[in-house]
Length: 288
Image (cartoon, rainbow, N blue to C red; front, side):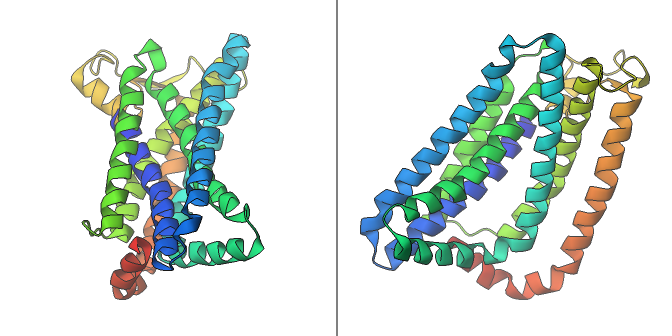
């Protein structure tokens, strides 16, 4: 639940900030008659994202067990790749996001009536599709061993709701937040969440018979950390930890976390001085 809350909050806030920037720019530039196009684009992007989530959830039901496991495994790996790219992209371009979106709005207004709708669809839809895919993968991982799907979905919904409230407070000027630090720290936590999803994806591929070693365990602490205990639930909800982990799952987890975390730390350190000097202006720009 906590992992899905974090995903919903982080991804939802990214999409919400995009909407805030687009709306604030049109309002401040005196072009409020164009706001309907932004909301039309946002509605279309949300509808496409929900349809994509429904397709992921109900689409594989007609497949065989092995086909479902293979599809789930590959989609989990794709989701991890998208989120990893997003973490580094956001860390690199967050300070220029507002200027890029404003430039896209100006070009869309000049291009034609439906161009602004398309800008909103692309800007919000990209985040929506990423969120739908990663939430589906994380929920599948969290509900492993036939656990309930209610808590992960509730966590995701609360995260998205929190993101919308924060974005509204940003728009009204009632909330000031260092977005660089927020995206940095949530980025570190998402690396650990993504590693759990990757490990789960490997397990799916092992169950599908595509990867070997399904019964070769690296460790089995099921007697110490029971899946239905408080500790087991917390570890499962935050890190997708499985008490019985195969060797291949453990190797995938380590091979993902170590280099990705090291690269993210290096990127944060390399941009620390410029961020410190430009942070107030950057945050003001993003919230504008």
